[in-house]
Amino acid sequence: DGQTVATAIPYGKHTYYTSIQPGRLIFSFVSGGTPVISGDVTFASRASYTIFGTGTIVPPYVAPIVLEDVTVPNAAQALVRFVNVSPDAGSVDVLTPVGATDYQIPAMQGIDFREVSTSVSSGSNFLQLPASPAGAPYLLKFRKTGTTTIMTTLESSLISVQNLQEMDSER
Image (cartoon, rainbow, N blue to C red; front, side, top):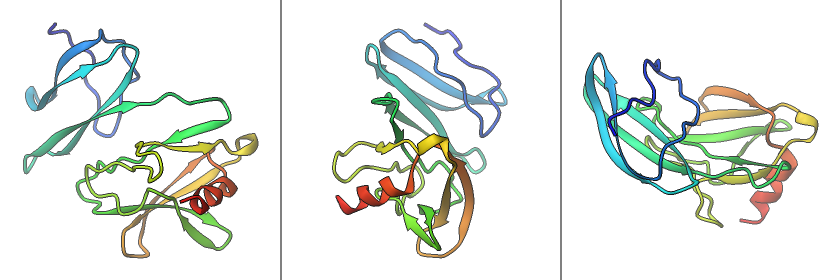
């Protein structure tokens, strides 16, 4: 319908969910007044989506990633998805420390640019993980695949180490 949903979103930031009527939506990402990504997606009723603008403007290498989101199944679980939207990162593994060892999170290994984690058992982009007890912090490490180079870390309170180990043993 030609309406603007969000404006002036700085690089690396996001908007909150916005209500959109079900059906076909044509979208564009604009930089400096020039559309750099355009596309269309058909939204289902009562569904949630995320649209990522990925790539670089110079040289031009931009494309959207449109993903359907899933709501949390219950308060005792978290849904975790990793999307590699960094054109410079290369292939990435997601790890967490377990004692003195960095544990590779199942289905979050060798994720290339514009790829999304996918559960081996369910085919979902989300891994269903129990929430950590009492909101204890949980450390995630992002490593360049095939190396020991940790590119960055992120602290989260959603996941417990014991449940990751149980999930890995079920693969």
